[in-house]
Length: 235
Image 1 (cartoon, helix red, strand yellow):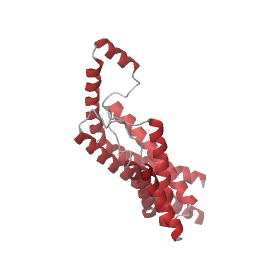
Image 2 (cartoon, helix red, strand yellow):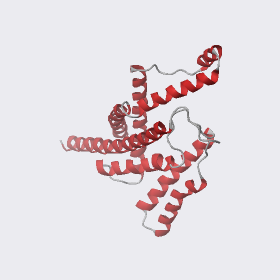
Image 3 (tube, rainbow, N blue to C red):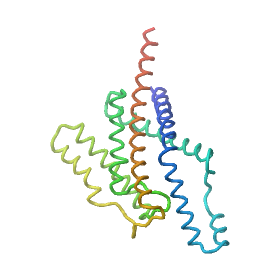
Image 4 (cartoon, helix red, strand yellow):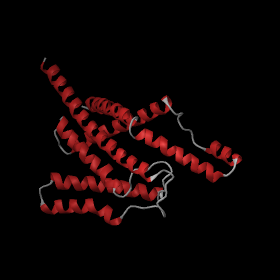
């Protein structure tokens, strides 16, 4: 059982992750690169001196070089993330006693996106480099709380029959938004508003596609390995 779980998580995550990485390369990555041009220009204008620019560059953290290296690093990161998503979906579906097959797993992926992408973006939209942001710890706390509350709320609404539990589920979904996400003192960005809007929309679309693809891949690989195991046992 453990071997099957590991195999399904790794295979499904890699399949979905590589597909999403290819999609990112022609959607969100060009927008990020464009935003970094604006951010660099703003930093250079603010630095006001060649010596300060050299000092700032020396203190900067390592970044992958543009081109093949950056594409490779991004693809690896996306694939690792997708593998993590696959293991999370597997764990949740097994704990809830859900049948693991492509359609159901894809629906679970859609619910996961609603929790970790759609609900959280209502308070903390995807941001380009150079965007103003609130306190990091506060944003992380709100994001985790919102994702957990939305996931639990959706489970209560969709899987529990008791009306009171369904009502509590709705309350859980609404609560983080009534509290409100931490926001920056002023909504500033070095990138144009149109670029930021395109990035937010593309990021949400990629996020949704990632979860749904991971779910479908989990269901497909699980069913394939289960069928193979049953055939070997019968033989």
